Image 1: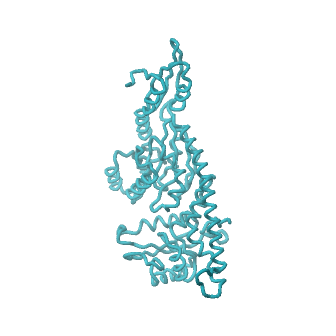
Image 2 (image 1 turned 90 degrees about the vertical axis):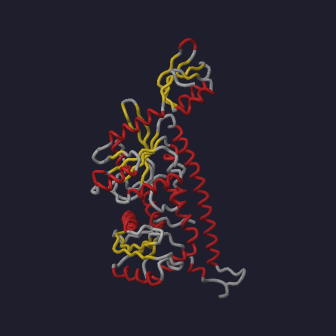
Image 3 (image 1 turned 45 degrees about the vertical axis):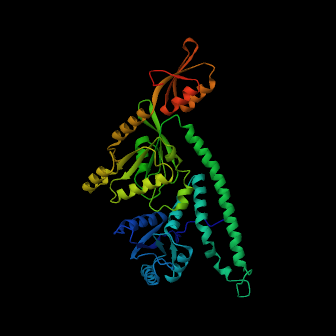
Amino acid sequence: MKLDTQPKIRRKRGERERAVLAGLELPDQPPSYRAPLDELSQLADTAGADTVARLVQRRAKPDPRTFFGRGKAAELGDLMREHDADLLIVDHDLSPSQARNLEADIGGGRVVDRTELILDIFVRRASSAMARAQVEVAQMEYTLPRLKRLWTHLSREGGTGKAGIGVRGPGEKQIETDRRLVRKRIRDLKHDLENMQAHRVRQTQARGKYFSAALVGYTNAGKSTLLRALTGADVLVEDRLFATLDTTTRAWELTSGRKIFLSDTVGFIRDLPHHLVSSFLATLEEARYADLLVHVVDAADPDALDHVAVVERTLYDIGAGGVPRIVVLNQVDRVKDMLGLRLLEERIANPVVASARTGVGLDELRARVHEYVTRRHVDVVIETDPGNGRLLAQLREWGQVEDVSYPDGVVHVKVRVAPRYLDLIRQAGGQVLDGTPE
């Protein structure tokens, strides 16, 4: 069985679709619901739909049947007809029954929840084999409990009209068949992803002798623009959420003769679907194994502090919470609220204020990273026996060998290496010279 992986946002003869946005304001949320629906509008735009109307309802808790309640669902239907909208986008996750009931109550048009919208964008944006496989796994895990919606026309057939014990119509049989096929496809994809992930880990570890940094941040914070400004990389720069899903790694020259690897990772977002957190773990390996994270924050965004909190939570979820980081307040050339910028500088420890577009602050960022690299790597001379071929090979894996000489029947290897390897070098029969502590 092959699932329909075409985007859920359907275009009509090349035209963009028209969407009504809807959200609930719950007691545990901030008093203003402006920012979340603004972000939902950006997501809709990325997926190919124009926002024509918005509606926010205040409730103590979601309605179990339609999420919004029957009266508000009817009002949403009126809004869609008034604005000739194609679909209703809900800024929350809906259960299969809530989506089905809401679709019936609005009296026409499709209902797309937040997870479905983000998956739609990921389908469009995935370009590498790994990203495509990850998106397909996430799609299938999302679709699995919703398969019944696809077969309601069959589930009403068969039997004698009394669905008693042991009586199953052909629709239910078809559902079970589809579920088995979907589960098998998920297993096969996850097996392929394990192999891809192992290959990526080997690539990451192969670069272990060099210092590596990873750009992380909320989506559309300007990470790709910063990567291009720092390394000259020819990468996609687009003012849309999730402009790219694939990790890009380039060499970054900090000073003459000293380079590090700098990687751009997929942007984070609030309420990232849990299917995608697990599916995209391999894509975020660069952040987990990096020596340093460069957390890029859009200083011009009024919700910057909330976005910082989202990124920090996500880093913790993927196992990168303990990686050291430097925070960059990017896009300061777009800041209009200077008081807000000063607040950011006060709330964030020792940030670099910069603009990837104008170049402001990039020299300071380069100097800060260089200082950190210098502290984390040491230049030493390792003395060992010429017959210790295993250690000589390991030195090339663990560090950057700069010179090899053979004085008085021994080998001296000048190497730049992280201090964490010094004990391993001693255990492997090497003597660390040049005054480095024993």
